[in-house]
Image (cartoon, rainbow, N blue to C red):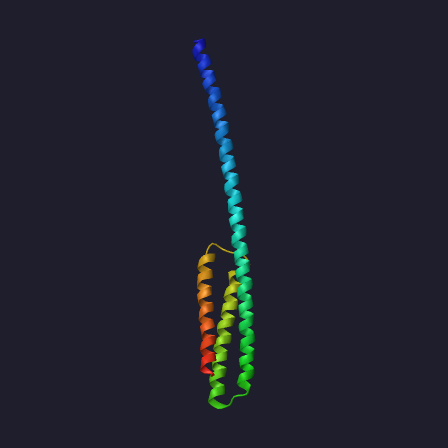
Amino acid sequence: MKKSIGILALLSIFAITSCGDTAKKAEETAETAKQETEEAIANAQKEFDDFRNDVNSKLDENDRKIEEMKEEAKGLKGEAKTKLENSIAKLESENAKLRNKLERQGEKASDNWEDFKDEFESDMNGLGEAFKDLGRDNK
């Protein structure tokens, strides 16, 4: 009986020690996961901030080009002037829509960040092509 109690006590000590190790490992794993998540969020936010800054520069450049085209349109007459002014208005509207879309995304990268980025880049490429097409039409 004493031998059974001794074995039971020894097994209990091992069980308690094992549970402590398991709890410690679980705590370490949770802490590691938390740190990795925080790093991923910080990286996504930095990527979004860089993207937003880059896009804002491109949108500002588009605004500059639009202003140049407006000046060019002042020197035209008749149908050519009307056609250019209509094209400028469309470009201006698209540029404003993209700027608003970026603002609606907010200050933070969200869960759908990659989808937003892909769609936005596609829209920006479309606007870039419209600028190129307008340049070809005026030559």
